[in-house]
Amino acid sequence: MTDTTDPIIQVKNLNKWYGDFHVLKNINLEVKRQEKIVICGPSGSGKSTLIRCINRLEEHQKGKIIVDGIELTNNLKNIETIRTEVGMVFQHFNLFPHLTILDNLTLGPIWVRKTPKKQAEETAMFYLEKVKIAEQANKFPGQLSGGQQQRVAIARSLCMKPKVMLFDEPTSALDPEMVKEVLDVMVQLSEEGMTMIVVSHEMGFAKTVAQRVMLMDDGMILEENNPIDFFENPQHERTQFFLSQILH
Amino acid sequence: MGIVAVDKEAIRKMKPPVVHRGAIGWLKDNLFNGVFNSILTLVFLAFLLRFVPPFIKWAFIDSVWFTTGDVCKECPGACWSVVLKNLRFVIFGFYPHDLHWRPFGAMLLLFTLLFFSYHKRFWSKKLGYAWIIGLVAMGILMKGGIFWLTPVDSMKWGGLPLTMILSVFGLAAAYPLGVILALGRDSHMPMIRYLSIGYIEMIRGVPLISLLFMSSIIFPLFLPEGVTINKILRAQVAIILFTAAYVAEVVRGGLQGMSRGQYEAADALGLNYYQTMRLVILPQALKIVIPPTLSVLISAFKDTSLVVIIALYDFLLTSKTVIQNPEWNGFSTEMYLFVALMYFLGCFSMSNFSRKLEQELDTDKRS
Image 1 (tube, chains in turn blue, yellow):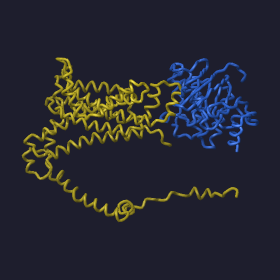
Image 2 (cartoon, rainbow over the protein chains, first blue to last red; image 1 turned 90 degrees about the vertical axis):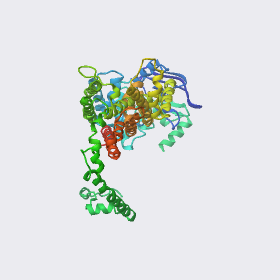
Image 3 (cartoon, rainbow over the protein chains, first blue to last red; image 1 turned 90 degrees about the horizontal axis):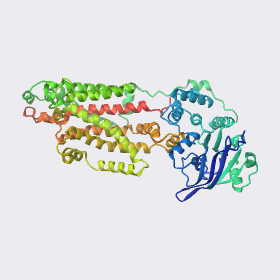
Image 4 (cartoon, each protein chain N blue to C red; image 1 turned 180 degrees about the vertical axis):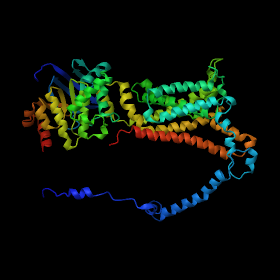
């Protein structure tokens, strides 16, 4: 299932600076369809910046990013097309607090995909069922717990029927008791064949789901391997140190 | 160590402590709580006793209501006759006397529309259409000239209808213009940004009075010969341009209060700039700034009284005209109290509206 050879995301010699600060240094990355990649690394290593470049929340200065055959340039049409194909889940959920859960989910489909309202609502309810939160459809985000909000955020992305999902530390702002309910949804999503790039330190999740785990530090990908070798037998001393720190 | 015993039954029976302690207890807690507060309470009571009864005696017991000015001069109390006897002039100004029903009808229409707009449950497309039809009807009633209505020159408009027109149109047009200017000032396009900044800073740099003078005296000099633009319209435009600059800065404050995450979430869904602003950012940003926005609008409402300096007979000037009449000379207190009350009613209902709007749009509350 995962040996589909056609890459959906190609990142070639990617470089990015914030002023004089070199955040991403010659990043090369290919993601195949249905592949799941987990990126870990210390804070400030550029891992969030990397996935934010993939849907152009950040602009890169050098190198190429090609998503589903379209290259990311300043062309606004291309950017909007890519954004509809790439879903994103944020650390702080970023639900729209002035809209009900249902309206949060139908906003993109109705205005971007031009789906009729009734059909958009049916799709929304389908995904809310999937993340087990359908009974909250008419509440506002502020009335939900963190874990519920993050599941809504995942459902909101799914309503756009994306080809790739990006997760930017989806569980690090959650209370410990709510991490599992979100990870369960993500595992289920991966089993259904979604292409996923996840920035996360959840080692259990990485072991169950990922085909490749990567360590980023100082704007570079230092090591990548299958999860078993990555965790059991890390090669780079930076990886060894990182794992020793987070596994206590 | 191990499981801690919990007496669930006892916990369920617990009640919150009773805080109510009757009238005496309330007085003790709130008015005579300590030496300093007791002194404050007594001083304030003495103040009330000194000033409130004499005011009531003056305003209601010794007062006269429907007399001539001469009777008033003999009377020790308030002369409300100055207001009531001249009410039609104060309210309608120089509008032809036998046509007063027309501005009256226009105002009635306006108040009806305002009343329905006050309640969120009436907000709908129909109300929007009602406003459009209503405003056109008000214009026709005031101006006349079609159907069987005698035309009335706008130089004769005055009093309360003029104040209401300047305020309602002024605020209704200044608000959207202000929002556009605020977006312009935050725009990534340098031309638009600098134009907006230039506009806002220029307008905020001059007093409203100078704008009114310019609109009334300097602006006509630039018009080609034979072209005149109605004086009320010029004042109206000056008020709109002035208020919009202030609204813009308030709205910009709201935009800055929005987290990056909201923009990013909208971007990530593929919404374009206009959709992001209209559907995600503005509904939240404008809600945050309801209180300061209403402050700006309330002061704009009161500032419409500055049109007296270009000789428009608004509500304040018609009142002033009455007390300059020898018959009613010396009763300015009563007249200005009445004017103050009318302005207060206007401002107070706007404040109420703002508070109600905030509550109704509040979706962050947990329930």
